[in-house]
Length: 154
Image (cartoon, rainbow, N blue to C red; front, side, top):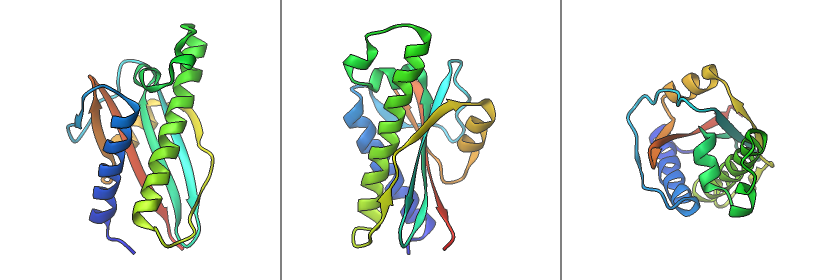
């Protein structure tokens, strides 16, 4: 099993790599505490299980998620479609980060990843995730992105 620092550094590296592939915006580490963006946010969660189990969570503003979504999903500018597009993008981001993280941390184990679940992020969700000690905080363009890994005791 890995210690917290190894898992955090791996999450940091994987998240940075995946976000760079999804976006052509500049990506850099953000300050320790990121305030809630003024725009609506979405969160994607992907559960994993096997010899280890837990959850990968990724949260970002709707506008950033739309920028990272495939062009076909960005065609409709209505507010409802914007959130749907963002939800699909954040789910794909959570799933991709989860897959790469599992491959990096547990390459020999049979760890499975569930389909991502997405939802609008509340102020409380953002604060809790932003303040958690193991959360990766990135600035993508001028918007924040959070990623966290939570393991369940076996």
